[in-house]
Image (cartoon, rainbow, N blue to C red; front, top):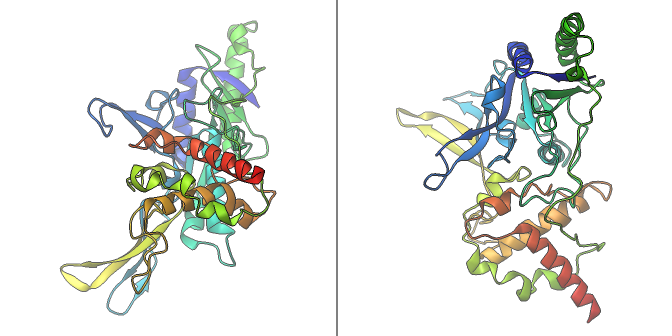
Length: 365
């Protein structure tokens, strides 16, 4: 089902959706960026068309809606432990671009299919979440989603195009998805069609023969390593990794803005007024942050920033695919947020290309 609608009709859809769902989308906050006179774009609840930032990439991914930055996983008292209830949380629709939908699917693999047991806390929140696609035609400056095969997705209930029609918004409904959302749109569209036909059956604005487009090429392109087993020399190759000992400052911004980073730590919080009562939380953590790999007895698996950069790189473009099978894509989806947000201007796409080039050069020796 496809339909061109006005902004007013779009807001009616939002009003109907809001009765059953919380709707999240990228929102621009003027002047709230990390530096003076800069903006920031992140995901929060929206209620109408004008709330949404349609034309720029969000600074942060939408993953914190499903995998919160800080999440209470249990409360404890003197003699009881109980899991917080989330029944009061309404089902959620997230409006996002194809790379982010694919990024959430990568998180599904990590939390739901990475072993015998599913992650209980992720699963119960994930079951409340549905996807809507924001059309992305050309990508953005640091994107390389095409190289990572993450530029397209069919895992959405409805798709929105705000690019091709100056006065109209194009919406496509996926026929095989959420029946409730399908009924909402069918009801509104049938009413809208009747009204349009009675007013002007020849109105060209009612032409609903459109397609949702995806990026076909990016300004940046990466060449992925093509080896069955990563040769051992590349793990200790100082020519490739040593520059990041000083250049990377281990701030973790690449990890916190990445849609597929899934690491966390757990902390127990005791209340001052009663130290026998408290809660256990899991909190985002990062392979770039010092002490993340610190083990009991003081042994640290990765002491310097070069080894942490190497670990992240292999995790994103080698280990994940090796773990889940060759039929899967790589963990990185090429959203480019790591490049966008690094204060040292380290480009992850450049690192991938350097790695591939180094493997090729070594093979020729």
